[in-house]
Amino acid sequence: MPTFTAPDGTTLAYHATGDGPPLVCLPGGPMQDSVYLGDLGGLTAHRTLIRLDLRGTGGSAVPRDTASYRCDRQVADVEALREELGLERLDLLAHSAGANLAALYTARHPDRVGRLALITPSVFAVGLDISAEDRLETARLRRDEPWFAPAYASLEAITAGRATAGDWDAVAPFWFARWDDEARAFRAAEQRQRNDEAAARYASDGAFDPHLTRSALATAPSPVLVLAGEYDVAGPVRVMKEYAGLFPSAELVVQSGAGHFPWLDVRERFVTAVVAFLDDGGGVSSP
Image 1 (cartoon, one colour):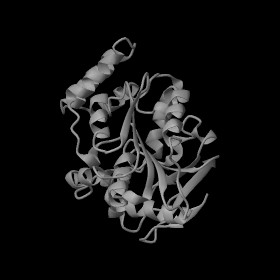
Image 2 (image 1 turned 30 degrees about the horizontal axis):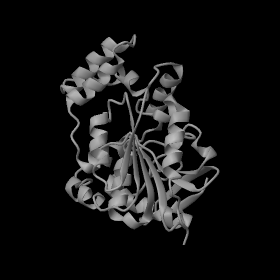
Image 3 (image 1 turned 120 degrees about the vertical axis):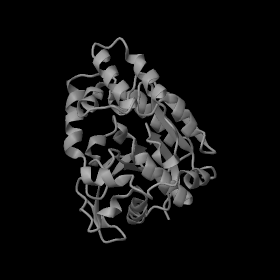
């Protein structure tokens, strides 16, 4: 796999798969090996996916200074990747916690982003509030599922601040449109793919200044897609609408029947939405 050097000397890896213009992909987790993104439901038929392994994950080295796992300090890694690829601007896709890094990168380097696709994004970087009722109302859309009652009870415990370790495992079905063998295997792999030390430092003190970031995003010139999952308790639709409203040029797409990983759920619908956005007069430009 190709590698490059971050400004602090850390060796970082990325994976290039597919055909078409490059699309840089930032994984969530936080701090999860980018392998879980796979081919993003077949998006590789339309774009060359450049999956960045964040420092300390996948093929990337563990940094000498582990404080550099903090999200804002990884903005320089994305900029170093852009320079490595020889691109004037990046088309950027970020999933979940990776959207925090994408938002900070866009705020700091607005002219370096061609088009920005935020997939079921985390909202820490922009400081939006997700209430307990936002999550519970979304969860109740699944009330007819056979696993619903115990999972919902655990979600209530989590949102009330009285969760036990078992509650976090019990709510796993809410992340997926289908709680089947494929989803269970995907969930089990997550535990092995995440760098827990890095995840603990990702949002540490100083990582985010939501007011400053929102102010910068309000004038960012890039077209933006916010893609939400109808069933996603991590990013309820009401809040995703609010997120899209932070940008001067953004569209919200709510993928029906999708959870937190929409490319796993209705793959063709996901690919169609993302490609339509990227092809709408977009594309990256070279120097």
